[in-house]
Amino acid sequence: MRNDGIICAVEHPKGSIQDSEIKTCLHNFLSSVDDQQFSPVNKILLLPPDFTRYHSQAGKITQFIADYFINHRDNLRSDDNHQKKKQVEITILPALGTHAPMTKEQMSVMFGDELVSGGKKNVGDVKVEFLVHNWREDVVTIGNVPAKLVRDATDGLLSVPWPAQLNRKVWEGGHDLILSIGQVVPHEVMGMANFNKNLFVGCGGVEAINLSHFIGAVHGMERMMGKADNPLRDILNYASEHFLQKKLPLFYILTVVALNDVSNEVEVKGFYIGNDIECYKMACELSLNVNFTMVERPLSKVVCLLDPDEFHSTWLGNKAIYRTRMAIEDGGHLIVLAPG
Figure (tube, one colour):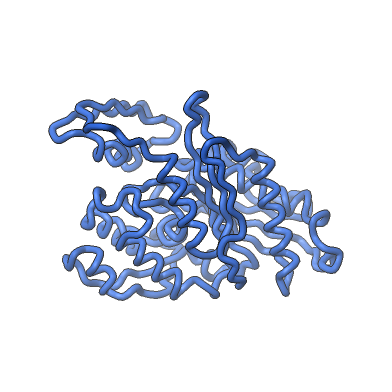
């Protein structure tokens, strides 16, 4: 596996990154991977988030990646590699974590009808297949993080190893290229979302997910939120360094998005490609600047409206509490409107 660190980093904190720029970065990256591999890249696994992260732009990025292999690959590859051409297999495994599987309608909205229709289909010389992650059954434990790290994260309350678990398709699928796609944003359990969380939680198993949430709860959201470096992330980073690096052809594609102050439209502020923690650190720095709203004093009353298309369960609805509680004064009130 190549050790390139940061391969692409584009930031427009005061503006927005256009789709054309993202697409160009992706196509150039995929073309370079094609040219530098000793064997053809014909079996690809994409790990985007589910519909609860629709605004991450991961669905659009997934379409751009598929577009490269369906429509543009031969035009961008060097002449020396044209003999490698054979049918390409793209498997799309949304990183559900414990969430319910995406509906057909959600998949079409997020990933487009061309990829989704039929579920398993051929688009030209490319076979596209969607799979559903079953966090209770479809996993394998690839290693155990030492109990000391768990003990440190829980202030000595718990001292057990943390099992690093992955969907079998990720670990045993024999893919030429694995792309983990998602948004870096403040997160109540992990401090900052994405990077290896997309694998070990989004594509992880019941033991790992439950224990990671327990560790996050014990450590405390107030000590965690918005911090890229924290004891729980140290556990996942240990698992990445000891069990993933140099063992999977894995790259991370990360975004930072925020609302435009005038139009209230979602804009991409940062776009990154890399295969180690450096691209995640860059994304975290930008996210802290564009995704946090600081208030001058604690708020006495907050009304939170949950988008019915995005927040359709109590588990997801709890984010109304996570995202506001640090801004509300002791004894204050939170009113949650949840039409979904």
